[in-house]
Image (tube, rainbow, N blue to C red):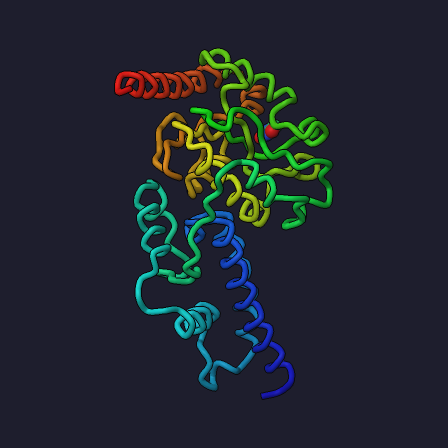
Length: 314
Ligand code: URA
C-alpha cells in the first residue's frame, strides 16, 4: 500500500464519520425521517459519491476492507449499533407508513437503517424555545448573506400553518415572513378563507434568504427543516398548508411535482398537510388561482368541521 492509497482510505473513513456526525446532528434537532427527506438524501448521496470516487482509487478493498462506501458505512454502523430495534427506528418506520408517494419512489439509502442514534426528537414547550435554539444561526451557508433570520409569525396555537419556501428581499429586511408581493396575495387568500393573518401561523422551510432569491439547496433545507418540524409539533395545527413544491417536498419527503400532489390531504408530522401553489407562482400564473382557491376551501372546510365537532364535545 502506497501513501496515496493510505490517504484515500483515511479520507473515505473521514467522509463516513462526516455522514454519521451529520445524521446525529439531524437527530438531535428532532429529525425523524432523515432517510426519506429528499434534501438529506441528496446530501448523503453526494457524500457517498465522493467517498466512492475516493475509495475506488484505492486498492485497500482488495485487502479485506469493505468493497464500497455503502458497505463501509454499514460495517462501521454494524460495529456500533445495538442489534435490538431502537424506539426511534420503529417510530421512523411508523411515520414513513403515513406518508404516501415516498416509499416506492425512494428506497432508503442505507436499507433498514439503524443508522441514527436513539436520540428522541426534541420536544419543545414553546416556539420561544425553538427560537432560542436557532440563536444567531450559522449552521448553513445562508447565514453569510442574510440580514435577519425570519423565524415565522402568527398565533402559536393556530389551526392553520402556512409554510413557504424561504424569505425574499422584503422578508429579509423586515424579519417577517410573506410581507412582499407574494405575501400580500397570501393575506388576501387567508382573508378569503375567513381568517385573519394574525389567526394563522406563517413560516418557511428555510429561515434565511437565499442569495438572489434562488431556490434553497438540499443541504440548506436539510439543516433548517428540523426546526420547521419542531414548530409543527409545538403549534399542533389542524392543517399545514405547503405553499409550493419546496415546502411540499420537504414536508412530505417526496420529489413529486406540486401539480401532482396539490389539493390533497396527506398525513405527516402528526397532522394533515395540504400542498397548493405558491402565491409567487400565482402572481406569474393568475389563471391557476382558481385551483388554489379550490384547495384552500378544502382547508377551510376541514378546519371549520374540526372546530365544530370540538365545540360539540365540550
Ligand atoms: N416567499 C416565500 O416562500 N416565503 C416568504 O416568506 C416570502 C416569499
